[in-house]
Length: 354
Image 1 (tube, helix red, strand yellow):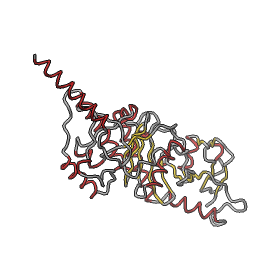
Image 2 (image 1 turned 90 degrees about the vertical axis):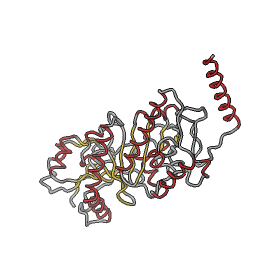
Image 3 (image 1 turned 120 degrees about the vertical axis):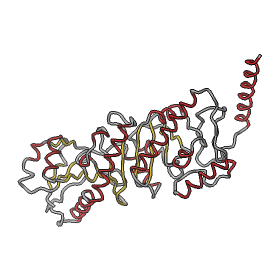
Image 4 (image 1 turned 180 degrees about the vertical axis):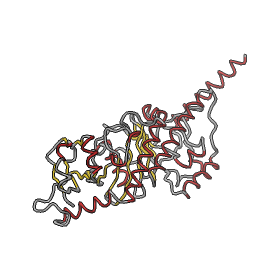
């Protein structure tokens, strides 16, 4: 593997690569945040030149066989260009188009990743629409966020994905997006109630709401840590949602399920009638299905009478999020509020009949 060290360059243009093809170059070494112009990126694709970021070329010999660093570079290159990686890249691009078509992302919003090895994650780049993704646009990072391969800089929000992979060994795919109906809950500090629609109970169930932090920062990434072991979907306060699963496609499914559920609740609220709820014994049946599928839920160890989180006000479509794994039993103030609300409705109904 013959490398050219361009780690001192901030922008890589076609002119910088003029001698690369003649020198039989197979790899470019770039700084982690270097930008590659479209024409330069097209050149690397045509000449099958891989891009690796964050490491300098060996001083004495620029071949893979020369040093341990070169050998490691060869392993990275082989993984990133393997048939398995090619399939993952195609799947990520397909999911990106689905997210855009369903209006779950706009502009360059959202990000997608897949853990392809113990310390290797393929992810989407920064500043690129998910509708326009191509396999050659994707990146590969380690679990600390250092970019290992890819022509475009990785998304800054990959740090959140990496925290999920560290906390949940079975997580292989992560999707972060901004679907309007689920995000509406996130920006009002509420979560949807449970025990309303079976599909939602099985695949999502109780969701969590993480506190707000500036996107792309380590602090933002850590906000999901308390929740991801018991929830496969987290509402991100004032931001959007994040879902994890065994594949990228399944994580995208969960985004569809949660947003459609939130949308349906909002439509039901316009009918002016209270929501009907699945009974606790039937909810237990759904939770048993969920457990057989290996999907997480903080209610797996709860008693049947505790399975359904119901809003404080009858008929409401939103509720205050509860701490992960706690019992949904009401305190005295909440009970008083319900009694008062029911009394007011009864009095109003009786008055209307006079």
